[in-house]
Length: 451
Image (cartoon, rainbow, N blue to C red; front, side, top):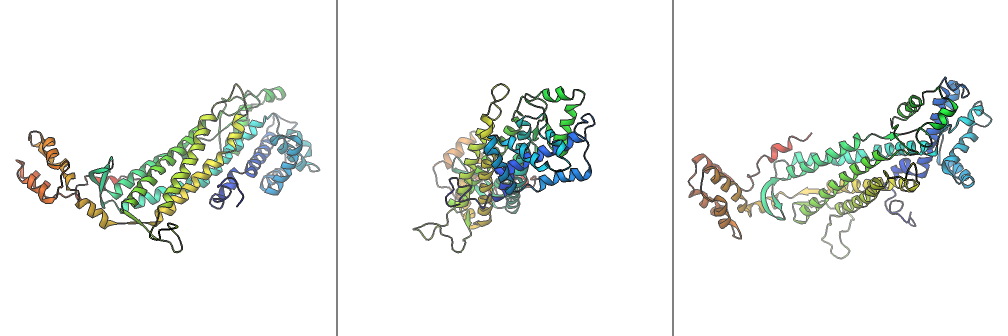
């Protein structure tokens, strides 16, 4: 680890360890084994392919056991074969044929990889890798959404001075501002989950050419569809060249990148709230904030998350812009790029863990929030001039502008101004009892609309 070039495999290796089962070279090989074995089983059950005889339940169990027993040690055997073939998928085929040697299934060995091009195996394996990766990433994303939602509900009635353009603005609540992030993250979370993972198994240029040449009467669309949907739980894409066009991958990576971008926005806002003391941070025994300033408790978790989200998005944005483009029926530029899917997931996973850790340290500073509101009576210029418009008073905006802009305003100033206005008594009393802390509109109620 200490000699790793990538921080994902070095400094952050423990944080992304679950992704090994989804995106490592071993994981890719294991999924290739799975696709090849299941295809052989599907072929054996097709009556229109008598030469690939029907196998017994015991033989099918033997084949499925090859998938189960494929360990990293077995993957090393495949790598050894690859040193001779110089072709990774062909090495899988030869490995499987070796597994069938001297067994009752040896007569079916030539039906391993039958009518397939390498991309039939690879595209399905990549889809399975993404499915496994999402099963690891989505719970973390969901946890962040739930944590922010819980904070939003807990703080829905805690007033806060808003800052548009960095300047004092109409008050809101801490809860409502957090609810905005919770809703945004939830929407992208659902879009990630809704992306269909597609796959193809239709040969060298997508037309079942080889399949038809051997068995013209077999319904290959149905058979390959059965393999893809029933055995692998993916969605069949018939409209392909040699490769599945990767459009769904672009959809997925763009959706994850959007989620990451919203998390960056959240991280930056929380960072700012910490900097102006709206939130403090719980200290951790033994942790050091600064090498020279003992008092500091830096918001490093949110900074770490922001940086890792940015790295993830750089990967995802390249993947989503590159992968849907392939010269004519096939070029190899997607192959090396696809090997970096796990990098984007890894940086996203690190970012999620950092944000979760950071949220866990937050403690609300109600006194600071209240003090800032009490120093910002000028924000009541908005409701006053709005009620003046209702009453038909001439140039209300301009009058409040003259009263408040660049001036030190307090409760007395505001209430004196209200008292001299010709307003309906109900409106006047509502304005006179209003404070910056109570001028929060429907902020509390809006939080209640969170799912």
